[in-house]
Image 1 (cartoon, rainbow, N blue to C red):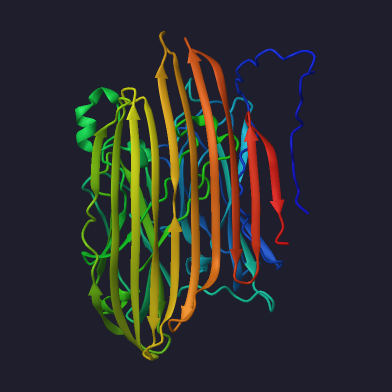
Image 2: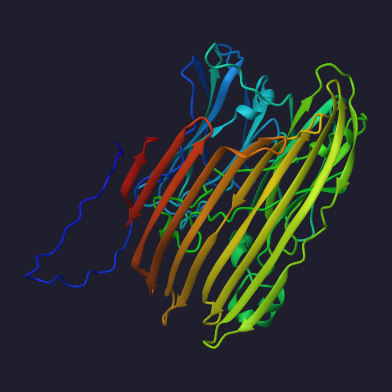
Length: 553
């Protein structure tokens, strides 16, 4: 049975037509919520450690630092480890980017909601189980949430972070994890992310175990400033030709590149996340945009290069932000390494690498009969990397194939005050592992990130007067499939997170005369074992009008 929360609807009498409704001015709104499923937790003995309780006020350059020590009453082995992030704020404040590092590895990235005068509170959880190799010993903890408080922006973010360790038992075995986690960041005692601008890169010099058999990189990537809305940025020549439009340049195609010892080893496509103040803040109250609260990292399989990293010498891993960007991107990551339990040293080689340095982006700019300009960008990628590692089990060959399709259309009108963006970014990665018998095991990971965004800014006739409105439809669709020896593909998991939001902010001579929004988010997932999750939220005027959780039946 679905649980449904609907607000009552009132109607006017048919005999007395209602007068036109006055524009709504939202002041306060409900506590932020998302349709995401909570992290599942086993019913086993567990211990919770408060890793941080801290107020972020004037906190730029002043992160929280501490130490996370595994609880003696829950010594492990653990079936699961979960982080809980809870906050409250009141007053007026911008959205802020935040990150959490344990032992130098970023384990959680998020952004904050913008508050109301009465105050809001919210909660996000994050599965930390993959980081168990780090969590077994005391580790430095760093939390960065840069904030500024003054007479105008009064909101102080009151944050609490806990970590709960769930013991393993007969029905809940110890979690299967990598053997080692290496941070790809700039510090273990300060915020680890790099903020990179056009032409910059970030390199970590790392020592790898000599018996390495596999390497998987987890990358966090987000744009800031003009790069918050990269999917609607115009080409540099168009921005230069229309300086009065106030548009951000750099075009729209974005990819993050990964290099091993200076050699291009993988590419990821970023999701178009929108902060809670993005386009029109009224769009995201109380349901934030996809990825705003629980930012998903991107995975790059570097196992084809593993055999080249076992010589005992230092090696480099480089993160490259998107080319041509007009503002900063925050990047860092973690390497998850597997090792051979029997050999002191493995060896291997890269046997193929066809990744081009950059894709060719076809861009057109055309004036339209209605006076608008239509800008299009189209590109794609197809590449393969392959390599082998000689292990105690014999030679293991890994091949990674990726296919990317990208297109974007951006209609600019009214001297840049009106933009309509339609973007489609999709593709798949197939990883093939062959233990020498010619019958590879394969995993296919597919993604699709469609977004349609409309934004309009209209300046008023008087000082401190303007109208800002927007509408967004965005989705993140992910699928995981496996097959053996060229057989049929079998779905392992899929998620489909879709959202539509619209909002308006109208200000006349310093007075807000309209502030309103509405939204709908539906998150659906399923797994190979028959599990599923289906949750839909809807809101209007800052409060939920629907909260429906549909069971697997």
